[in-house]
Length: 95
Length: 242
Image 1 (cartoon, rainbow over the protein chains, first blue to last red):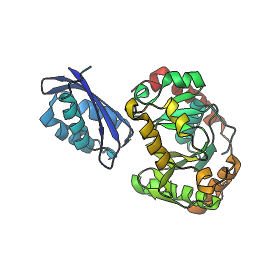
Image 2: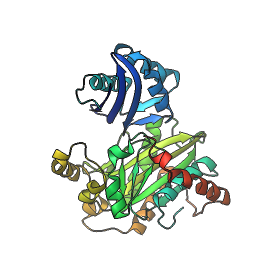
Image 3: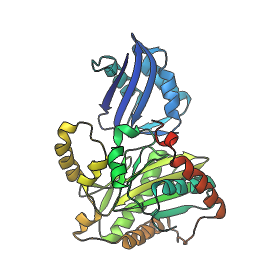
């Protein structure tokens, strides 16, 4: 199942996720939006970190990727990304 | 550096070429011809831009190497500044460095008679409305920050090329943006020329950083690099990577 969710982070930016799920497992994740991430290639590392994780594991996995790769986020957070993916997993409007 | 207006791909290529060459701290003031939409490096091209409308109106579309949102570059001045990360000219902390560079733009606007304030991370507001936005990247131990100063704003035109999240609320969204965005013309009650804005911004950078800017042009190395990067910025692969 592939589904999308757009999440406006409170006091932050817009985060759009497109995730592929198998049950509770995230098989693939694409994150887009008008947030800032330094360095910019960190986005691929964050997306890769989500692969194969359950929805429960997701936030922790993103937090680790951010910390281990010294990624700075503005307008978005691991919590916000994980929240958007969780919301996507519950969407009925799958594509 | 001040040059004639360039297309979107050339403008972005020059900013990147200067960042990767970095001979001296460089401030560039420029315009876009034809008008263009630039999107942030994390944005989805088709999510943000009505490509058919852009094509119909001859508007360029380019993905930046910096984050942030989609920008319609029409009646505005864009600035870019490139610095060595280790020069100490701006604080090493990201947020503080945005603030320092925005300080130069605030001073420039003050020379025009507009009182603006910095709203972290990337906005300047005048009378509570956004008049300037910016974005920064750090590569190869260099800092590039580019941003725009709105001379005039046409929200209807802007949303004829930018997509709105929900078509059902297009009218409401346009009204909301009109209320949240301003321009030099609106603040001053009269039009202001590009030359005057560029001159004020130059003075703003000089005043904030305590330097005298010397007019320059691209070196042959920067020109070659810009030509190479222009191909990338114009490519389908880069612009559609998200």
